[in-house]
Image (cartoon, rainbow, N blue to C red; front, side, top):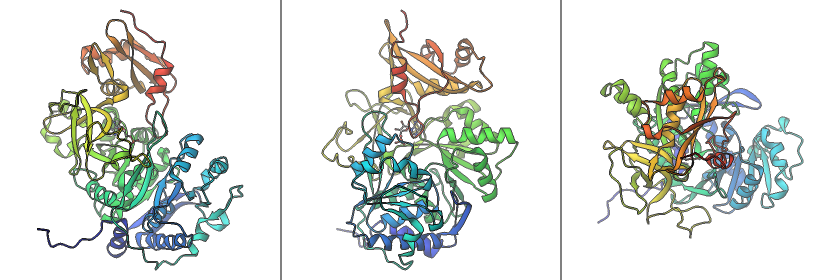
Length: 543
Ligand code: AMP
């Protein structure tokens, strides 16, 4: 017997309708190329998204056609998110930091019909346009008087385009399983792969991120997403904030600029922010240098990579509580969150330090398990390492245009994350490695992430990475590769190794330390271990 409840599709357009009516006065503040502080309301934003939607319908596109963005976090990018998805098209956000060949590959693979481009990226796309024959037009995100001189074929001014549409435009009826957004994985090996989100998956994920033990987004919050709109939907913030009515603050191209971030936090009274660990390093460096504080900022969500304890402790000293989140492009992205901060009193100082480094507990809606090489489920004892498999309504079931491949599925119905993890009896997940990066010494796994975390605790270590190198007896042993901090140019290998004692298992102790000026990073800021392994390919330890 079916329940007798209404069958309303879960679509992104319903966020617009809710926010217009209930949270219309909520504010969006942006830093853009042409305005250091643009501000308007959700009501105005969505009126413009409707104008955009109306203009798009005049182009004769088919449902499901992809329309791309190459843009910073600002209000126009936010409008494109909604204007494109709510008219039944797919908003394909592209990471402008990818190599030009990858950009061309992604645009052609997605068959993007139009691309919205921030004025900053016009020179970049001018160099690619000829190789993207399917793109029919490039929309520059600026007003008519700011239109750059460009060789782009069919360059369209964003504001002029909007003028052609009506703010009263009504969204077409959509199905909840229709695709709404597309994001390619940054892929350290092989070609990037497309993850195609549906209205339903996006809406359910947005609800989930708002839960108190996840991001806990409320109407009273002022949210500064430092995670880019081109990286997994800015962790859902652009959807969750209008649902809650929280004020949104977009830093434009200034995501890596500690001074602008501190100014935005203080002037706009930001309470919650989200970003990868390096962003917080930039902010902290500015705060230390300037003596400024960020008193309105209550909490931050850090994810995308393991967060060193030193960053959390520095943020503690500014009264900012840190919550680690784990997830991936294929998971919309959120899979787990560490709300240990809300139970601080339950733990001793040492236990709390250990706990907060973990990736947290699965959020409702995401199921997890860890399995061994034979696919056997491993116990949740905090000790057993295994390949992490997940499933849930906002987890990818196959990649775009690779629907027949099950390469990502070790077991039917479960997505293989490519991460190696432990899970403890309380459900706390700890990511120890990427599957490709594990170090196996004498048949036992060494967690490179734990060793890296311990190494970056040393005040004169700016960044650290651990890779496995050949050892005649143990097959592999860990090599620690370190970037010294600007005031730590004299720190020695012996001093760094001594600082690890007592923090990691004795047999995890790196056999050697090498110093480099910088580590290779992917476009989303992750250390490229493959490149490091190439760089140190001749490195071998003696028995
Ligand atoms: P992406 O798809 O670019 O967001 O990358 C996802 C990957 O980033 C995950 O599979 C992890 O390897 C890594 N990652 C994300 N969050 C964390 C975290 N809190 N701790 C360790 N690794 C993380």
